[in-house]
Length: 111
Length: 113
Image (cartoon, rainbow over all chains, first blue to last red; front, side, top):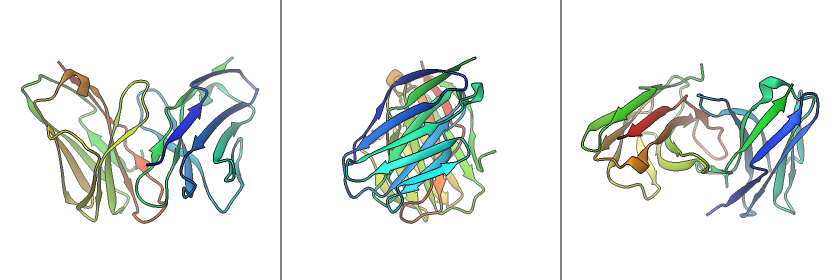
């Protein structure tokens, strides 16, 4: 099955700086890559996703890039704010119902 | 408000108890899921239902028993659990079909004592 690795496991950034989280996947047939944000005491919420026919997607301060050749994708958060502090999960699927998730990155934005 | 509602939010049960987790989605989706989230581990898919039919059982022990009476409701029946089953149990739904976005509920925190 699909194996998704996520790095780093923890990330501390100064408010206003950028944060980057990287994920790799094992199955070259994967074609859907969502990112979820989980705040304390809540369920994961989709923040952005990308499909394999696109190399980059941006939504305000967040962006995702996909390198199909290298089988990795990344989340970029610019101008970080305290409310960006959360656990972020990447995931990959091969076009069916089964998302495989990374282990998560705990992001802390220091004021 | 995510459109996926889980009850109860918190549950403490003994190893000999029988309890159930309930999930309801108001999004008109056709697929529903149970995930288990333990500390420091990736989200683990437990069960998938598509149009009320179970399409995935990810080698889950029989002490967890899912039930999907219709496309909007999903239950997870629990009996004779172990302390290591303590975790956050997340329900999710998706429209169904390839590459569909999954929407999660807030989760049910389960503690087995």
